[in-house]
Length: 358
Picture 1 (cartoon, rainbow, N blue to C red):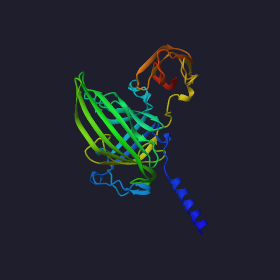
Picture 2: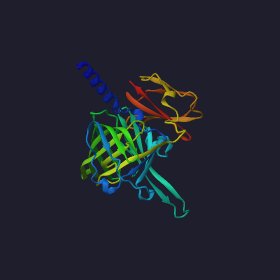
Picture 3: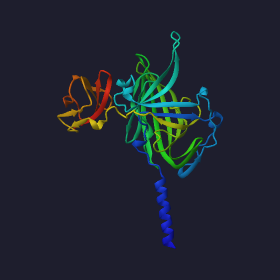
Picture 4: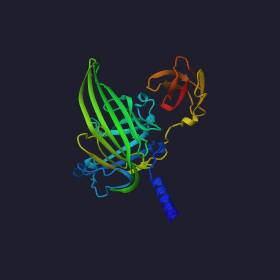
């Protein structure tokens, strides 16, 4: 009998382990993804509870209501692009992806042509998750410290991050936003939304925000927001939360709780993650201490430029009118460390890569 019970316990424990969601870099958004989400009715939204934390939880939100009209802005669509596909890509050289955001219809009163205008967020993907690196809203600027908006953590793990956003309002006026985030994967199980059921990992993020204004070098705190939060349910192969309950600065409305869920994911065909994969561009040797050769194969034709950046996005080296499928990079005045480079032809960015000097 003891052996029989031990076998049952082993099988049950094994099934629990196999049911947990483990998110990887492959689960982050990809170029060509189009996400459509829907807003929950505001009356249900205000008092909605995120439910329990823990293992093998069922979160049932299937009875929630949402609007079905596009006229009330309850639907939100966002696209993920190669950063090189945007006109502002030169300002964000380290970006892996660009995300459309804050889209609106612009009516030209002279031509009476209505066009869709969007801002863009620029993000970096790595083993720790998806990091907000810069944005064009409300004006083009880089983050001095990046913000992890999709932490790749396992159940029970905690991730702490700090981000700093600096916007130059005028010659003598600078707006600074500092954000402290603590994220914990506090639950896993099944989340049921109005359109489907998903095996999911829940990540709870608490957010504290300090907004300051500096005029002629003198700073004053203008706003302090504590108690902001995000409950996000992530699943495999979706690239974004399938359900979210939040009150924070990443939402359009910061003063009250907002709930939305994924309606569907569409992946546009023939949109590669990169125009040329980094694996097709070889840097030998890498790392190097004196010089290295960058081989491009047959991926680049005609003349092009190469621009090298350090990890703070500062331009360190620029070579113009380069021709051929191989070029030599000398250490020169470059310090030891990690560097990124862009290959740029007459039509814009061709591709990017990285190397290490030691």
